[in-house]
Length: 319
Image (cartoon, rainbow, N blue to C red; front, side, top):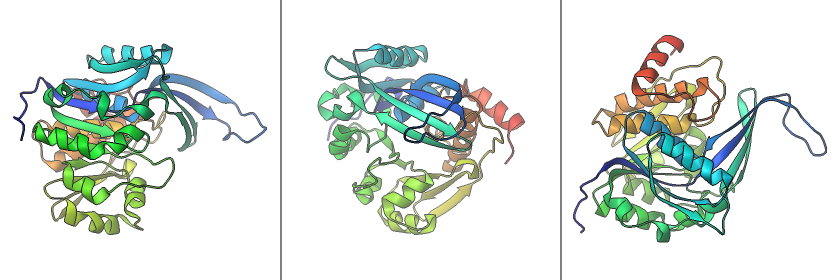
């Protein structure tokens, strides 16, 4: 057993880095051989991990990031956005043989379609993670497991390293583009402190027909961890040991878009978790942060501070 860390940061994020190209106010989804029109276009910081990191920093946490970008303009855009939020980028490597990833998002009404070019994120693995990453911070967050082949392959070794250094750990699995869901989720929830799937992901990853069935499938393997199921404007369901509780959400009746809302929930939750708040209060603030993130396009534009999230949720949204 290694000596527990004396951390300098609250939070370390290991994950993917890319930009988002967002088409809004689209008249229809694309069809082969046909052209559609978007009335609005945004190029913003993308990737679940980066959106989470930036919003966590805005909510008052000292954050570091470990990942890989390409030596290109998108990579420089990513670094600029992270540094603007005072995130420690010293563990981000730049590759001359990979390009930085890009996700194209087409939003129509309350739904969206996405295409991602993974780029550098696919080949990033434990080999690119210095041991200091695990001793620098008291909490580790990982996201988009299925997009990152190298991280997925090394996932349980990464979790083991984190626990050896005394870190608490959260994982947001995100969607599996291949829809195979080939991960030992029982082993995963037994090895971490917080598991953050949305409802669709929870049903798919457990091969269940309902949230209740999915919880029943994983609950015996939780140890002292917690499952937090994100349910959009309906709120979140938290399961800890034998207790299950639903926390109502905050409803934005006219969202700019929902890009990064789940990642913003994670940031809100973790910002309170690391302050020692109850799981109920963590989920309640996560709901606030997720809702606030929808008032502006992109995942990082809307959240300004802890105080602004509380104020906007109080004055703008209904429950």
